[in-house]
Length: 513
Image 1 (tube, rainbow, N blue to C red):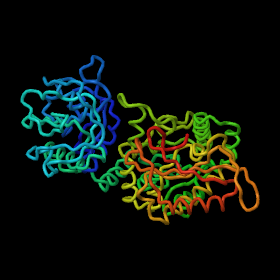
Image 2: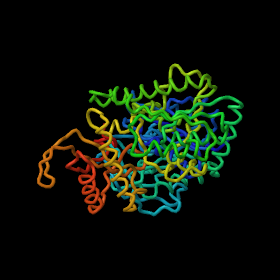
Image 3: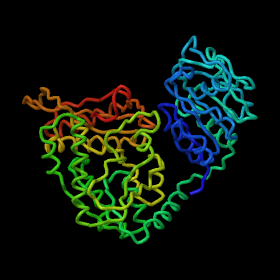
Image 4: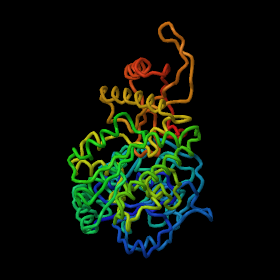
């Protein structure tokens, strides 16, 4: 697929994914690559522009990540962000030092609107700063295009070379006009036309799958989540009955979720495919009996899922292709460059050892989650499924603190269903990044009616996030929380207390385990 491309070179920044997402929101395709990527490879990919990410290091230290100086002579526009801006300054003869005053958080920045980067941007605009070092002196030939009271070079450029740099982070939502700045870079500096659109992606992908598969047999592990569902429908549209979807119900799904998945993909659904549902609840519960360590629970659930899937696959016999719902953040988080490996249970790796197949197909490997949703809508998948909340691979196993039992699963399913129903009734569901009920292992004394109880506490969680890498606790209206609490303690047996988790990420994670 020939398309315009921007490359993001990762220097260890925490926002590398976010930069790529923002560029794609401008309808320009973007990929993240390690900063060690060779010049030959860059030339081969022929990007329209290159963006350097932030990073935690000081550019002047011997062991800090870098890139060849020759990258500036490729004739490709370059935008440096934070560490990337300092690296550009350092490599091209400027001076980078520890700043007399560090800047962290929302900062008013004065910008020069004559710069292509700041066209139609407010002369004074709020940007997100996060730096200890700063550019003390811009390299020769550069002009300064933005500053703050304590940061003399908040942006600089050498437009005849198409070299641009900003000390702040335009990719984060806290930078009020950051998207406009990135759009200016990709359109006004790089000369992109914006050919990355979901309808063309869907059409092209279906055609490519059809050509690749031919008359081969395809097997898909269907979880019912957004990623695997969109991958399955893409495959069904391409090859129809050549596709078999195996849905392993491990008993750790949300209330009625197994039946909802079957209603969409089963024999009564709209898709022409083979559907196999495996009800393996008891098998998983027995494997999890007595296990309290969260990482062990994850491993058990992941491994047992693979075993069950293998057993079903053997009944089908040899297949030519195995489909996975891997998406682009999975690829990045699995260890790109200097980025940390974050997840311990997702679609990258962990392939079944004993399934007889020739090749893996990952039709969503290039997409971020919001793009997957847009592809789902383009494919005609029901909206409730497309906008289903992200759900971890181990399911409710990581929303039950301590041992997982059938009783505890039932409690958290019922509490979660009430919470989700009331959030939807209040009309705030689409505004939240993630929201769910979890079961703590805390039991406390309560009184209901004239009796004393000693029951579990439910913890409610709701966060606001754009990238799931950082998150803030959502301020759910008190009347909604009050109504949810009342319903849970009255309708869910075994619960006498409801708590609300106000912790952001970091220091907490979004999930509980």
